[in-house]
Image (cartoon, rainbow, N blue to C red; front, side, top):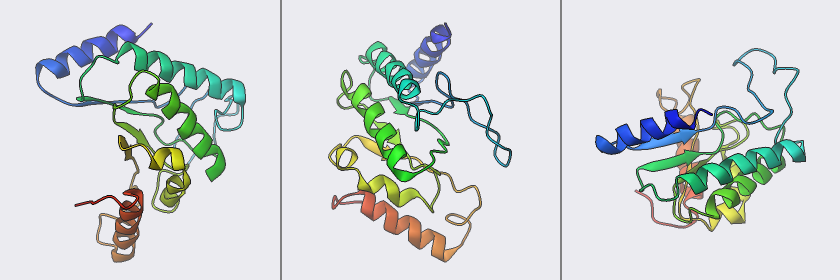
Length: 173
């Protein structure tokens, strides 16, 4: 349907030597609410509904297959601002989507996140052995309240500690 728009954007980015992060802002049967507003009443959740999670897995499997031959300039973000109800359902989501991408893209950089995509829930990502074993994952998070990058020393320390944990013993700079 709208794949032609993605193809066009990738061709343009490739021509200009730019990187692209293909980010899911919603998934089949699932849509986000506006920050600060109640969640939409008519959404199914890929975190609590197996059929909706399967639909999301299929979308990522298809996208990964379609773009398997694209170079490292293309990266995937599985779901921006996921809003999962708990850490376990978010971990299941991340691992399931990552497996779908890895079926055809073993080295594609894939951004994963925590249920809140924030400093308070960031460490939850680190409990996944699947993610820990994958050297081509990156961590996506937002600092919407400025606790990390706006001079809050506690927030910056928590982020630094989280980044070191995310490295799973690997050298970070």
